[in-house]
Image 1 (cartoon, rainbow, N blue to C red):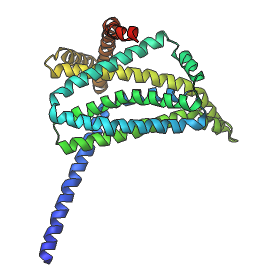
Image 2 (tube, rainbow, N blue to C red; image 1 turned 180 degrees about the vertical axis):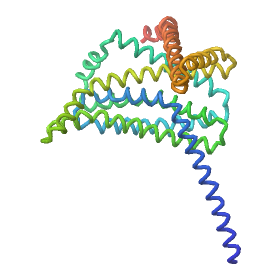
Image 3 (cartoon, helix red, strand yellow; image 1 turned 45 degrees about the horizontal axis):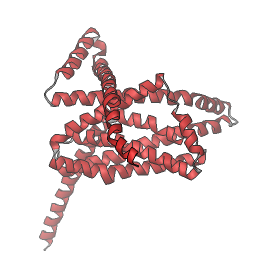
Length: 324
């Protein structure tokens, strides 16, 4: 009987080792998958702080918490199950869906670049809406808008993560997507919480009796507007880089490898001119070319939406509007 118990314990120990190895592998794959979505994370972090603009400081963290919970709900109740079902019944659709998401990121990046040079004064219109709502209703509307935006970026994060583990077992895919979903949410909204509270922390330091603390606090308060603008620019570039890169890699997977080869050859040519910086150039040139490609693709998609999509949508809904 004791020998049977020892054998059972040996089996349990062996299973535990296999499970631990599987978890280590899943964690490593999650880190790799998450790194591929880094550009979207930067953009998500850059976009979210604007949703707490106009609220008192005591409401900032509760609003971010609501958005974070909505993001987790998006990922774990809708996107993760949908991604796993897709991997089972239509794995061939992952690349086209990724490319569609990449094109959407390029379109959003193009809109942001256009907004930098020709602001649309959306904040004034939003202020008029806020004046007609109660504080609670306005907060709920702002949170709902942030969660709608989040589901687009979260879907792209999950799709990129799924593509990176497409050849892994189903359970590994599920664990990787869960780790990436939770980790990205904590990373993004933790960073956002620190950003939106930086002004208050700087103001508190500026009131300190210690001269060094006062200088640091004043620098933080003075530098935050510029930091947020810089973060927005970085987020826009990252969006174009990621979106363009996704479409370029998707084209290569579908047999159109010309753009990918052109970018690779350009990186090798530039690296050959500066061999000491070869590794750095090997990363910057493809990213820069992908961003330029993403910018051009965003313009094309934007023109298609404005010239074809919107008129068609209005035409389809015009009879309903007239009948009502």
